[in-house]
Amino acid sequence: MAGAELIGKEEIKEVMDVLRTGVFARYAFDNERQGIWKVRDFEKAFARYSGTQYALGVTSGSAALKIALTALDVGPGDEVICPAFTFMATYEAVLEVGAIPVMADIDDTLNLDPDDIPNKLTPRTKAVIPVHMCGAPARIDKIMKVAKKYKLLVLEDTAQGLGASFKGKKLGSIGHMGIFSFDHYKTITTGEGGMVITNDLDLYHRAEWYHDHGHDHLSPVSRALDGRTILGFNYRMNELQGALGLAQLRKLDRVIAAQRKNQAVVMEALAGIPGIKFRGMPDPEGDSATFLAFNLPKEEQTKAFQKALKAEGLDTVRFKDNFWHYVPNWEHFLAKSTANTKKQPFSDPRNRKTTYSRKAIPHAEDLLGRTLIMGINVKMPAAKMKAIRKAIANAAKVL
Image (cartoon, rainbow, N blue to C red; front, side, top):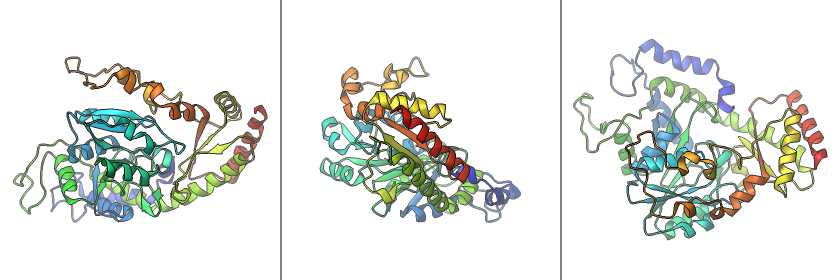
């Protein structure tokens, strides 16, 4: 559970600073807040950590996706290429701005296959969203080259990849914009919450204005009198979330170091099993080690091994079966169901049966059927590690 495992006195101290002021709002109430600006401080610290000029705290990773897409001027008539393996918020955000998500295949990194991007292009394609799934980088260098060739915008979905990097650059800082999630399961948590990062001042302004009803925050006048250029909505992070984020961010390097140490022990236990291979890593040093993904030659072997591990008390996920992270399993998405029955369902300019067919993503169908993914905790004491090694050894007898 990463950062959630380390909630302690540091988080309590930061939250108490806010409670003493009684001001939970991101903006205004300058006198009452007594100089306490937790979200602003969190944003500044996050930008420094990420190596970017600008960071914007928002209500969730899902909101961050919508805000970034809006800032990038993606909307009706546009198509956005997304990997088949991702949390559905990636696709929902594209639909939220009125664009069409186009499903692309993955490669052995379990992330977007840069070689499949040209296959999905049409004159309507405006952007691509590489998702750094399960804490490890996509082949973002190749994705950026393809995007540049075809003049595509790149929005990095780094909801699961905080702390990971590619050749020294933090994930999320490489594309035009990057987003992060801080929900309870993420590498650091603010309960809910997210972040948008960029090096482009114009994109930052559009994101910041949009996330706060269009307020431009550019003048010293009161909040009721400041300027506005665009319409927006309320996606503001509050001060309690900012306080938690500040404390959690200071622990991030410790979280990553512990995960890498623990992951290495589990990898060693698996490495001796005939047929076991680990996910492709374009930059092994950049893995946040939040998860460990490994595969076997055949799907039936993988199912048998997973069942044996479960019997030994060790849980893994085979994402081909997962309801929330694999496009072909989203029956409500494929049926174009919305909460508003009067709302026109999203207009698919292609043949939906072709666009979202399992046949269109042969690598995902193969890899996600043969791959098991195990969460790596920060706290994994010697006794737990011993039990994991024993479980793996016993389960391997079925292979």
